[in-house]
Image (spheres, helix red, strand yellow):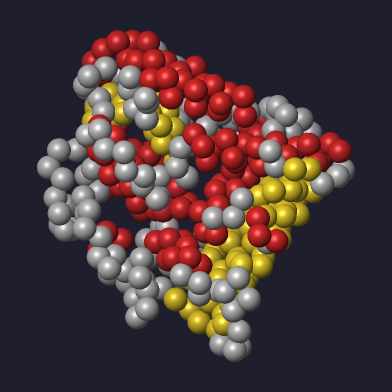
Length: 390
């Protein structure tokens, strides 16, 4: 079935008026700024027009110039941005470190400006509930970016699971190993990350950085919520002040079991995101470094490799995902753009007063569920017991 809500130039139905965006954070020297800037512009659904890109005045102005924004619309703080741009922008994208999200989100909600926020939404459950309450009071809008769900073959994987292709789901295995906290320079000196990554609260930063993605991946693919966890957390790398490896056994709904592993000291893994789902009739595997392929096996012993050109593909063959023909791999930024594309549809409905749930866009409820999952992992690490996800 072809997608009838196509927004990028040359693909299907045209959206003539891009939604106006402002950035909070996202300078050109940040970890994610350029990715967001390219992703929001790729399908011409958004136009970046303003921002508070950095607390550093020089970097703030430099970023505005790099992003082709008038320097008059590069503001020094959030208050100034909202005071000048309320009514001129359709949403604000927040991509500051997660410990700064709460005040920025509350300011935007109070001003009546819709929000698109980088994951993790906030570092703790109580803060997320505050946001949920404020959104309810103000009838506000918030979407949280879980960009890995934007890969076409992940969406195809979800469709195959929902259609019963695997039979009864039995096991969910998710992992996201990385190597950054274990690496050293040629002079054998640790490679030091941003300061905010070297601080842990009750939920460690590695969980908010990587674990939150795996929680969403499991929920997105199967719809199964985690019920109980037992976990081990360790510090293996160069920075003793933070946890850098987490391994958890998980009991999901409907007697589904699983394993979740993530960390930053797995040598040889730049970003080893992998999802494996096993059912009574077959299995599916997706590896982020091979994003165009699904590996499917059935209960007769057959093994298949599926891509966007396979004859039975239902979702990934939609015109919106064919920025270029099969065999020319799409990747991380395209997946981010796919997510933003759905946020644009969702935001347009919100601004038009339509209460329509977009199946590909996630907000505060999913964030609370994810934070409760990560909180249970932290409890289990301390208690050495199975802990309920509440």
